[in-house]
Length: 300
Image (tube, rainbow, N blue to C red; front, side, top):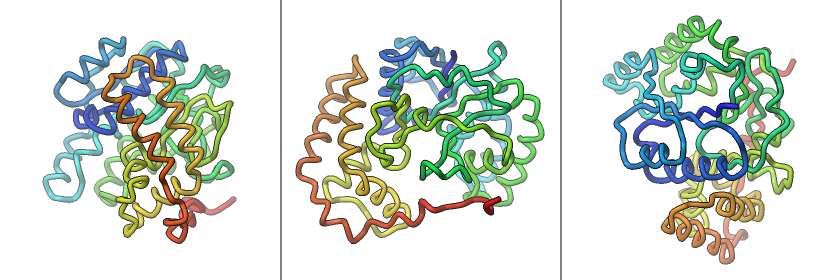
């Protein structure tokens, strides 16, 4: 099966670039998925690395990018979102297969999944924060019915453009899919989008660093994390609620990425060592997981 990922040029560097490398190397080690990267921006040394790993790169332009550029010029949006919106291009770029897998780049592939034989009506996805929270899904892993999404693409794009212009910063791709396809999506097994803050799981097939990623984890462990904003408290709370699971999964990420550069290996190894000195008591009074009760829609 084909796996689609999406990145803009900025995402090839720094933390996101590291996560993308972990994703590709773990995919090569543990699956037979065929990786395809939808990309916007100039090619660079990182895109060359992807190609050397057998990743097919497609230069892909979001059809409504001019709207985003115009809003950005007006100070009402940001072009940093273009990499995220590229996922809406999957049904336009794929012309051969009926079903494909899409993931964000901050994932680790741990095994093949029997669920890839599913045939969702539009797509299959798993919950956002809580394992039982099917009211609102996370779009970081999507098993997609390509033809079905393509059949509604024009209507979906009209909805996107209208809502981006109305809500600007409050609106992003995951919210778009949740609203437009409300009640029309299938449930993906949790093991295909397992979050570290759900705890250890020997049966996890795709590990998703949803929430705190490696740089945030390092900052929290170093005691440099800013807990003062809602965003800071949310990421800090997710990590601090499951420190041992994060320790385990960071180790698993490193172990499942053969061929990682020595610099990346050293950085992740140093991060793992920091867990030994982390004082959970120092942040216990800051942990607040109320936001994980989020419901986008009234319960039916």
